[in-house]
Figure (cartoon, rainbow, N blue to C red):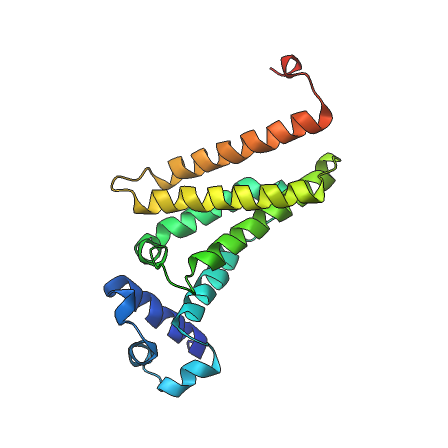
Length: 193
């Protein structure tokens, strides 16, 4: 099956991001790398930042099939960390782009929505009410925390393994969910254990 045009553009962009400073990448260099006409780019994307957002959105959707469902949240965290681990060199550069259309905003928006969806489905599965404003607070706080943890891990000089990072993030989220469920159900902590 031949590679479609969007995939060629995304693959070319990924290769360029890993190989050179992002500031030197433009639509012309992307399309030369892809072996396509420059004007074709605009049939699919607004700018180079739009391509980065699409790379993340499409690839993470493929990597984390159950993204945003309480029942599968541990697998989701595992899949997301594995995805970033596999694409480490690319994301080490991408998350350091500090410009108006930085792809970090796309990543953070996705992680926030994932957290909101997990807590919403947790409320349904565990039969507890989660106040809408508190759910928004959790979404913003935990989404930012997840991004911060991944970012620090990607940029570390001596990062822990994918498995260890996954274990840390899963424990962090599990502790937060357990704490919420304990408070929501008003369970005495001495009853646990």
